[in-house]
Length: 154
Length: 414
Image (spheres, one colour):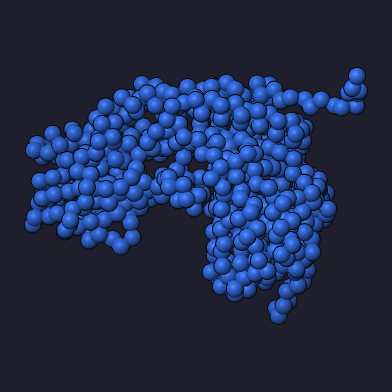
């Protein structure tokens, strides 16, 4: 039973209940929808890029505590990052939750990566990994030009 | 004094003793399995019977001249006869073996459908339907230019007979309804639906997936035209299912899939097809599945379908009573008559979070939309937590569920 509190750490419950940056952006430069058909979770990610830098990022949608917290934490760490930094953070996060090879990040990003660590508890719950990665996949889809079809976590 | 002689009391089920017949419990000590609505566990008599069949009597069926093939064919056809008897169907040629209820409905929609449904006709389904009794009809309507009409449930969760009657018209060609809802456990008044539909000349298909494992079903008493179910929900193997159809309807339906085993003569120019049921059983069938289904139906009959219904009805009532007392728990209504399937939401906690917490307490439930998105949309919810019962469940399981739900509430209320 100890695992459960590792999955639902206080920070997850907090962000799940009170998500940060839970709003739309009026004129986003990029946006995309994410959909997890398994549980019906839906998320829309909005981005406002200033050149290569993420000036603003937000999300809307409905989902479980894990996906809501993942989206909330994602928006917090992504704000102000360059696209290259964002990709590096996602790559490491993805590897941590799926059990892949974890890349080393530049020192400047380490603190942000650590902020995402509470979510890595999903690794022990294969059915829930997609909840944690859904907003990130939507973020990637937004950068690729906002696919007409919602990106699916399949 | 009343003379009670001759009235045989029903033997009540003993779930604790029954669990000893289900090896899954020996291999998963402490398991609280409340997902029989998705698929039931298998008794040893089915598991061992299928294994023994492979060890002793297996060969391909039909047209084998050797004795082993004849034994295998006999075992396969015994499964058919047992299924006929179980449904009280008139004729074993009315029993078509398919992969499951989904395939059975697709067969009717794709074979009977285009032959008998024309542009401007209507097909009625209820808003309780599983996607498998919804999408095939939606596709048929798109294909032939017919209209799909959805019969609503009442706010109380029961099937709305008056609304249904108002939707019926001479344009109605098919009414496809579930017997017991896989989301709310509502028992649908299929006998009355058949009367009303037949009065307008419409055919009726009943999805019996949730009814077959837990209540008496007599297709001739119901009066429907097609009845379908899946073996795996009835303690049988997965991969076997049944389409029962009135013989004259099956005989008027064109083949669905074609190939070996379903023809009488093939020439380069033309093929003649067998009569039902073989016309609809192209290729090597699920031989051990049909045989194992027969064993599962024997198992159910051995316990007694009325005894199973009584047991699950009482347990359903107990669960409703207990769950209703949990603050913040919102139980979906299932009408006046409901059986064995309960869906609920807990405060604003997402069903997947509830499911994960329950799993950590050893309680296996299903979460999500339960392949009933139209119903979820109507109720304005993304999904539910669903507990469903089997013969092996008892009050301890419901107590464990309630305790785990309380623990979940506590965790998320911090």
